[in-house]
Image (cartoon, rainbow over all chains, first blue to last red; front, side):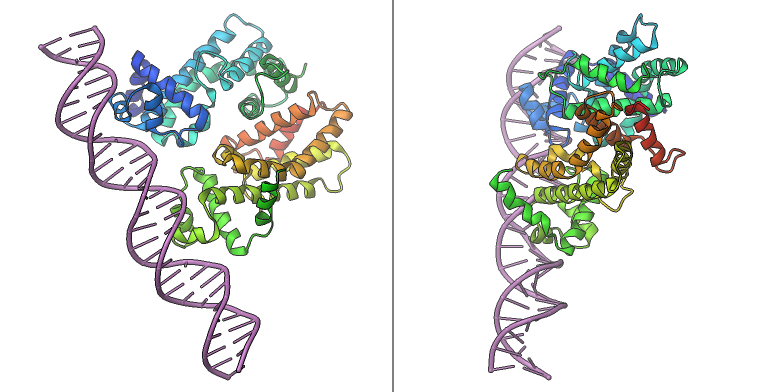
Length: 200
Length: 200
DNA sequence: GCTTGACAACCAAGCGCTTGCTTGTTTTTA
DNA sequence: TAAAAACAAGCAAGCGCTTGGTTGTCAAGC
């Protein structure tokens, strides 16, 4: 990580309650309509303030997106670490992580939507590396550990890194077809994913 | 399909060469930057005309997106039918379809980018049903046939429709990580996908 | 064979509106 | 009473789209 990015991160570490409230509103809207279709007036209106007041907290709309993604990414990292905590069997770890990821995609947990990754293309290049850094040091490290464990036991068919990408794609896409209120539960779906990617 | 949609479709059936040229430019830009970030001035500039002239061919930017998605969807349907033509073994069919889908995602074929599906959210509701109708009568029918065949032979682990969604997600996401110029070829990737979703 | 008219393609200019963001001031909070 | 948060007002730029007029093409009519 470059020096410039290290200067960016402290801002992410201590987010005031007021700021976090605005971020949750923004994340909701980004989830519903996407970043580009969401205007600063939309965000302000739902938060009950005027659009100009937003810029007292953030210096640009782009910074809102960045902070939102950083916050989300950090929250997912913590959730992932908590999910695998105390699990020794890599299969158990993987099951927990799949369910964790699906929960975030469908916003079942307390944290924000994983699908902010959909907005990757909207995030300015200068910010991307910082978000990636947060993701890799926590969230993806959990995945790598679980998948490497499965691979060592000969339980997966692909290279762990390829398997990770295939699983991520399958999970993320479920946003576009899976209905939480249907017969299939999120846990069922997680089992389906595991059944396909593990040699049981 | 409603009557209103039937009136929409003929426009998609006969697209003039000039119109198709503009659509290819638009699709390129949508692929590169996304629909929202692409302006009508961007499209016109790359096509070598002024922005106003676009509206001689399309009545709105939204119609450009719709026609582009319809054209792409039709092209993919034809490609899929051609890919499975003459193949009797459902496994062979599935292999062909996976490679076909990956090729479109990475724009290796002559046809446009499959990832226009990414712009689903940008397409006005009134148009969506029409695009879905085109997709289901050709492209998705091929997939259903192949997957049902595999399921009948006990070669897949999930319900065919769930398997289809998981595969679609895995394929679509590959746009965000797979490098065409890397060691792994598209055919290799297709084999990886098959290895995971088939019980061989 | 030349004119004519119809047509599609495009240009030139700009309208009305929305966007992200700024400024100076007032209210609220600690 | 000073800092933080929000308001009120609006700017400059960019957006999708419209309008009226100018080209080039080509078949029909005398």
